[in-house]
Length: 137
Image (cartoon, rainbow, N blue to C red; front, side, top):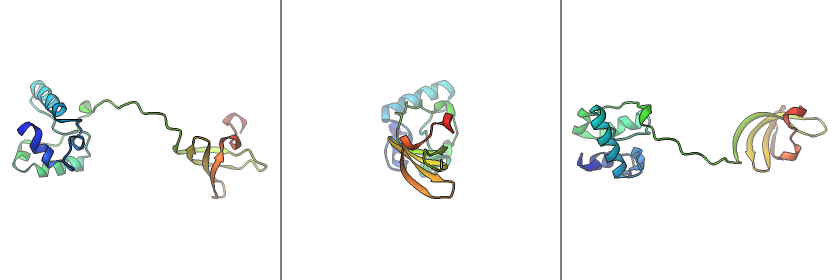
């Protein structure tokens, strides 16, 4: 496979990361270890089935000796994610106002929430101080 060059040229954007590897050496080490262990080597990982089949089509005559296999054991370990203070959510909330408005929080910010109330009104960036804690509902 010319040290991975054939599969790199067939990859969606011509990069090792598009194939699921940080660089050529990671591909070569994993391929060699897998080949020695069970007679088959992994050339790409972390792709959808559609992406893998497209890669296979682009491999021309090498494709006859290849197949698309879903292998959960070859998935790299997930990196711990940083806790974001902003993002989509979907939880019931009650506002601390005269009518005790009930709604659904749809986006969370560091200092508040976007809420859709029971009548369908969008309430942008409601401060956290105006949201009742669950124990007070």
